[in-house]
Length: 248
Image (cartoon, rainbow, N blue to C red; front, side):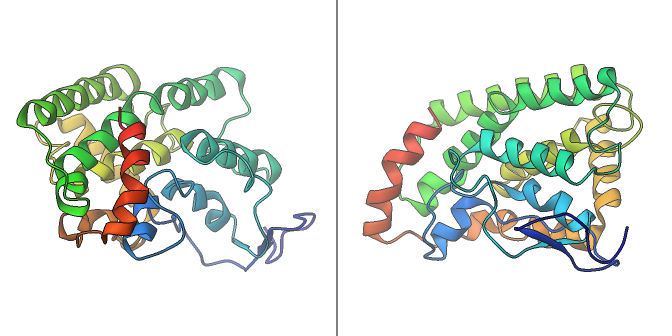
């Protein structure tokens, strides 16, 4: 690929070789830093900057989907838009119908299953009590972690199985989206890979494919969730109804 992407149009231009992945910080991080966006889902999500960085692209103008509904569906929509517009290497989003269907199957499942349970674990275990000062009953937390465990069983048993990556021998969008979600409960102190050797090995393969340094950099904020400072009362008043609606 050349140092500038021809025909990219407004929004993304080439910055030359030598770049790997760079993921956006989670939406709640901007809220905790006093940003304009509040709560998870306020930003598209860490995986959205995967393809621009892998394609040596950088954002110069508003993304064409900026006006779209904020949340997980928007994140996936942006990833698919980038994959199609910039003709990414085939392993990210295969052109073969059967291989593509496996990626689509995971993306259709994750936003109401793994994503939901990972976010609930983060907020029930850490962010509600620490960041927003809202008590979470032991029963609620136990139920949340039980649902997360069931989602992890599906992730490992149905999607990963004995494969190197979720949809086959090569990393795809499915893996990037999945590892992003799993970092939410990891940031809350949940041992999601403990006792799951296949999932733990997959985690290591994804991190190696991304690059260890960038992987840690990308998740630096979410992995410090337990150290979040309490939100100020005004921010809490704005965030709490949206957070509670999101994690129902």
